[in-house]
Image (cartoon, rainbow, N blue to C red):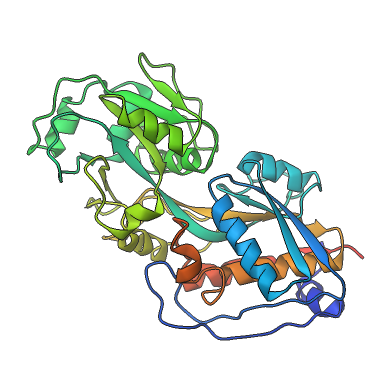
Length: 372
C-alpha cells in the first residue's frame, strides 16, 4: 500500500481538477452536520468505475451514480445489485472497483493482510413488524433485545408469555403462537443480529453476520428479502419479523404493526427519522477495520437497531485514474452538499453520517492507491 500523501494526490497526478464548495443549508434529520468539501474530479480521459453490492442500497447507489456522472461526465459508475457478500468477493478478486455493502469486511485473520478497506457511507435501520390480532390500532407493542432473542431461538413461543405481558400491561395479548420470520443473507440480517448480540447478552449466542444460523423452530418461516418478509407477515397471524425501515416510515410515528424497541437507556422508541438521527449522532469513531457500532448506544432518544452502509474498496485500484475516480465519488457521497444531502437521501431510507463519522470516513479514502 502506498503512503497517504501519495494517495491524496492521485486526482492531481492524472491531470484532473478538484472543485471545492461549502455545505449548503442547515442539517436536518437526513443530513450530516458540519461543513466539508464537494469533490468533482475530471480525469483526462473517460473512466468507468464498476460497482457491485447491496441490493437494498441499489436505489441510493444508482441515484448517486447518475447525479455524480452529471457533475463529471467523464466518470461513469456501472452499478449492479449482486448482494453485499458477492460485491465484497468481487472487490477482493479485483473484479470490481467498489462494492456498497450492508456490512463491513470481516477482520483479517491474524497476520494476514487486509482484503480491502471498509468506509462507512451512511446509516440505515431495521424495524420489527408483527401481526397480532386484537392489538388496538395506534398501540405499538413494546419489545426488548432479550425478548426478541428468546423468540428467535425458541425460548418464548406465545404472544401472551409473561415476559411480553410484563412490558405491555395495557394490551390484552392473545394466547397465539409466535411465528418468527427470518431473512436470508443481507443488510437487514446483519443489523438485526448485531443488535441481538449487543442487547441480549448470553441469550443470543449465534453471533452476527450477513446470514445467520437460524434454529429450526416449529412453524418458523424464512423470507428471501425485506419485501417478502413484510408480505408474509401481513398474511400470517402471530408473525414477528424484521425489515429495513422503508423511507415512508421515517416521516411519521410509524403504524400499528411496528414495535417500539427498548434502547440503551431503557426507553422504548419507534424508528422515526429523529430517533435514527439521534442514534447516529451518539456513535463513536470507527474501529481499525472501519466498522461502526450503532446498536444500543447511550442516546436517550436513539433507535437501537441501526447499522451502516459501507463502501468496500480494494487497497489498490488498477490505475491512478480509477483510484482518483473512486475516491472522488466516495467523498462526494459523504458530502452533506452532495450525496448525503437531504434531497439525495430522503427517498432512500438512509441517514447521513454525523460530521464526526463523515470526517473519519473521508480519512479512510486516502488508504486506497492506484497502481502505476
